[in-house]
Image (tube, rainbow, N blue to C red; front, side, top):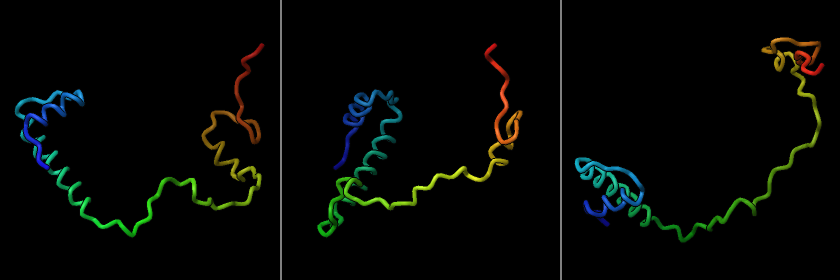
Length: 95
């Protein structure tokens, strides 16, 4: 399939893209190149490939549900402007 200049202008209009007259030829070549790649992909034999309708049918790997504190308090509070022990210290905002 090959696009002509009028079709390129129509596509640009539908996409609400302002294309100068000097750019139409370049855009035409680029779009024709993309359509050429799509034609190449249509030649690929995918008859043996099972269609994938989504990831919902796949089973997720389960992990142990363990609650931890992370174990790296110093790294978490490294850039804190002020700290009180293992916590962020903030100014009192309620009187």
